[in-house]
Image 1 (spheres, rainbow, N blue to C red):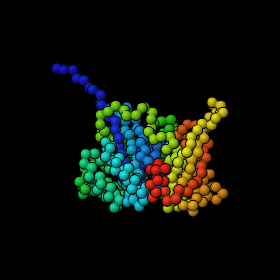
Image 2: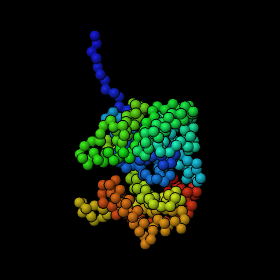
Image 3: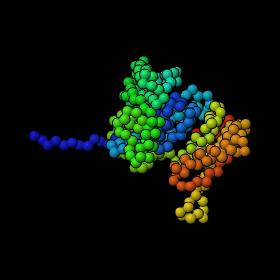
Image 4: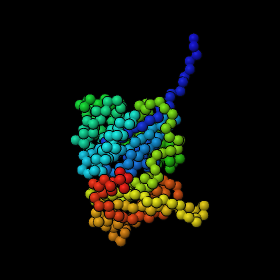
Length: 334
């Protein structure tokens, strides 16, 4: 009789992509899984413009999350380029998570994306029902049935259909941290739910050693991250037409000279671009009040990200109709 040997499960590593129509909760979910802010969030559509990779480290796996812009019907050259990013990403990942909000019935936008996903045969697809904290159990059950039926109608075989609440996850993690404890394991809501999502995504990844060093949370360059945090602050509380018109470019990030080693200061100079002179007043606000608030809010997040005190110098500039101008798009990093 041969001796039994229990070999450990192989380490897995790979890329997972969250897709969905704008404002489906993709960035919030990415941040909840990674455990820190790596993707900007907003209640405005088309918030995400860069493909941010958030890295989840586990003893048995490394899950690299690719956060893409929401697929939408493009009205500008920028919109077309954002859609191209989405489709290219789909062809390069190991698993696709289709995010569908629990509080909104399936609509033409969801069906449009699902139809495109149906054409991708080899990549496993997981349906993720987001924002479950906003609905009761009856509404959630109806949404789960509708998503299952959507897959059947289009010939998509969901590897899993899982409800999650990234908001509850963040609240539980914060409360647990405050009390000096870990978030409750195995809870079907909140943190346990987001953890369960990771548990279900990992087996769909290929066997592989880690792709990134332990401790790395994103491979996004710091200057891009800083620009995104400034843009997130600038998006808050502006009129509906303005979010698409805002772009931020960090021109310079330099340590202040002649500072003592125990009191460093990082000088950051950034430009906030809008498309029309009339939009300038909206961003700056009466007597510069609004721009000052944008600076204060974003500086707090930037200092947390970089771990150093920051002096933030913001300027608002007009780049006429930049969303439709190939030259301006290149200059602004698209």
